[in-house]
Amino acid sequence: MHVLWKMAVSRLSDPGSISATVEAVFHEPLFLAVAALFAWQLVNWLRVLERSDLSFSQPITSLSLVSVLVLSALYLGESVDAPKIAGIGLIVAGVWFISRTDHDSGARSGLRQ
Image (cartoon, rainbow, N blue to C red):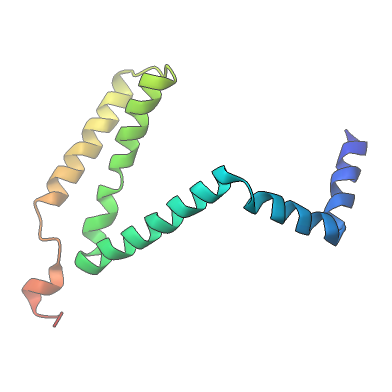
């Protein structure tokens, strides 16, 4: 194990291997796809924040926890027990309550022009 660690550190200290690694990473289609998805997510999030307050938008992102539980139960065989269902219920209730409020507080107070 100690020998493997030394080999890994020696590779990192060699500038040629770092550039080769970076070049290999940028030629990997999966990495490029994930990078494109992250960029799209950033642009999408900035567009959401242009139209609504963060206090409205951020809690709605917690719905991703619901989709992760559902997909992990369907595809990975994750067990879904009563505490998880109760947690999902609280998330959905919180998002429902928040969705009933104004999504742009500046619009009613006249702060945004």
